[in-house]
Length: 544
Ligand code: GLN
Image (cartoon, rainbow, N blue to C red; front, side, top):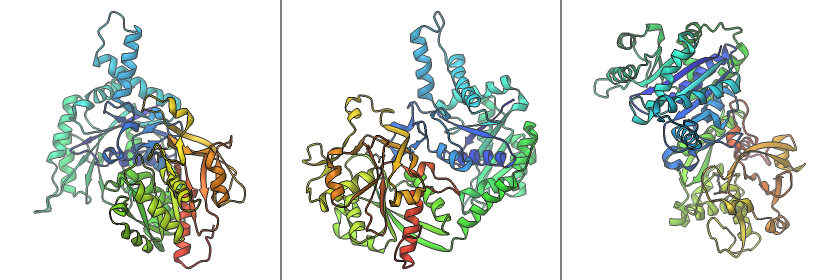
């Protein structure tokens, strides 16, 4: 019998539900259970793909090409599992399905309503994930905050699931903020109490409360939460601030949360996976005690919100841990270099230059200037997606002498469209879910840096783009020394570029960060971090 755990949030959004959900999954994995995780997003968008990362944070891409909420990235990184687009349920998807069925005539004669039709569709989607994954435990995180109008149908659906699946197979965890007042240093539980009341009003009595506080809550506060929440004291936990987010499963487990959940759901831990716990713990230790530090410049257009680059930020941590290196990132707005061209020289002080993904013309001039600086000063460079495309533009302009070379995304009428829409994109009318998405096979050229990093000639990486290297220009780019070391199996699409005589100059059309995990860093990120370190240590070449 599959067990369902539902996670709701109170008081504020961004309270850390995603991390708590991932941590619960991790604690269950420590005890030998298989888990999967679902994120519910109550917005009306069908998926996150049409949302601006500046507002909503990064769009996470799954193997099967889902453009999902960034919390799926946390689940994948913590749980080391590959999720599907079906693991992200939105209001848009639910209504789209129900309305399509109504139009088809499936409900003929009946009035189609939020209860039962919308709630049934929500439950159906959760159960589909349960069935397909075959997991022992299905975690479902409800986005937003309890009390939001748009979240109501989802809470109603999970309320019904207790009735249908049984008390012993369902568990509600409520995560809520416990603020500390500056003036008195007092921990305040009133907002949490209100959010629990709100949840009860909807018909859900939480089984577990996780208080989110900067410090560990005091015994009195814990007792108060237990009393007002009608929850046994041993079911109140605290997710307090820790130096690394990867420590959260460990601190919650120490408080007894993993054991409590198992007891409550009748999950008899078959084998405490000591090896799993130890390897997680040692990863956390390595992260906290890195021997070296490097500083890199991230030149992008969404730098005001670091969540826009969350998978990249984490990929740098994973890569850094693999060579005992703390990676400090300065987020530099690309337009700075357009407004003040002399500022480009500030890049000299960095151990590496990183140009991430992006869309549209804004800031591209600054990014191209940063790539040029990296190439000319032999500073390690890594480019991802747009960063790859702009590296081609830079090389075409400044090495091949194609002065106005550009991407048609930036200038439709350029004389030299070295980056152009993929042919199949010309007929695309709808913006949603129509990019080249998800994992695709890539063939690596033997003897290249990419081949060395990946240790294989065949890899799968995740994509999200509409433009690509124009095949007409491959010849001239290669003749001038650019090596395309990764290509699609038919040889048509360029996937990785490198400049062999540089200390480290590599870029990829795909996003290695989406598959990066603790203990399993993305090879391209690892190579870059190692290069930054080796150059800083005065080595002649990168030792990989
Ligand atoms: N804007 C570029 C494209 O659509 C790059 C996309 C990206 O960086 N993810 O191809």
